[in-house]
Image 1 (cartoon, rainbow, N blue to C red):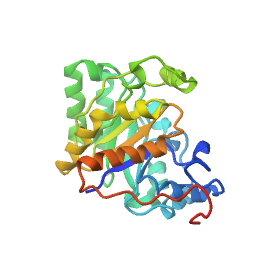
Image 2: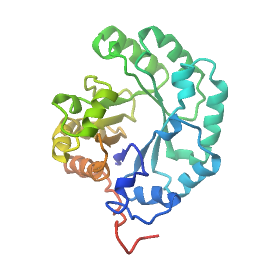
Image 3: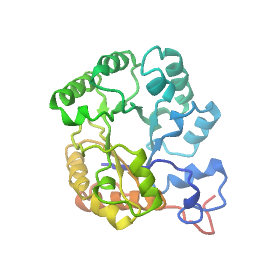
Image 4: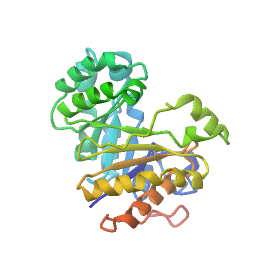
Length: 283
């Protein structure tokens, strides 16, 4: 029984020398990150399709059970809004091929303007996707959360494609006034949506955004512990990503979340021992 946890990136300057060795080359940082967490969000693929040798390096630095949840390029989801995207989709799939099973899910993050009126475009896009990959969809239009009719329609569209609904939980961030500059910035950039904890598939994906105070982040994720523990007992295989506005402690917090779930479900496999930040290094 495995719980996969991770962060929104693996290469982050504040972690170097704090949690990860400070002297690592860029092609060693993912390997070190993977001793802390067993999953990562692939946010960089939203901005550009990676080079084949870059993706090959990602595969070489991780084990076969490591999970990448890779965001589809913005040319597909935001610029073309899922229409006439055969060429960029083909290029993206070819680029990530070296990851093999590490490409756990392809993440279709849709813009806030993608409304219930666009569900036909999403349904058609999902029908045209090639088999052999797992897909998950993140929506941000409030109608999908506030109107049961549209929630059910979206669930039906996703269910027909065996796609998961990605939960992005920002309720803790918006629960009280910001304290840090990063929190104030996050309040302007992140969506304010209700918490949603219903899984549609055997591989639910949760993105949880806490606060820059680790204690407030831990307090805020308490409802998720029972939810994720329940999924595991049902035989589901969840992936949970831990964010904070400044992400300075996100790496440590992701492991803490894993430990907290393991306290409820001891059968969950432990994470590997993390590489020490200071000398001697493992590399």
